[in-house]
Image 1: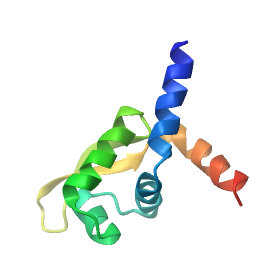
Image 2: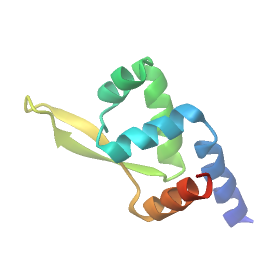
Image 3: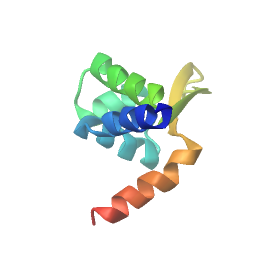
Length: 94
């Protein structure tokens, strides 16, 4: 039963176009909430909400980094074990 709950959580996280757009941008290297917000022309709080959903489903992970100006920022990456799944999913809909 736990597996089904986890699968439903993942599918729910992926069942939103904005979150899929965020995943595409993270895969392209845009992984800071502010940059994602600008690129998607969406308010930062909205982007952060979507990031929390993806984090909770373990689709992405976050890590600290430095901006080009040397400031500490939070960045996101697609979870290592999730990349093959996303690739296969993209292949299925082509």
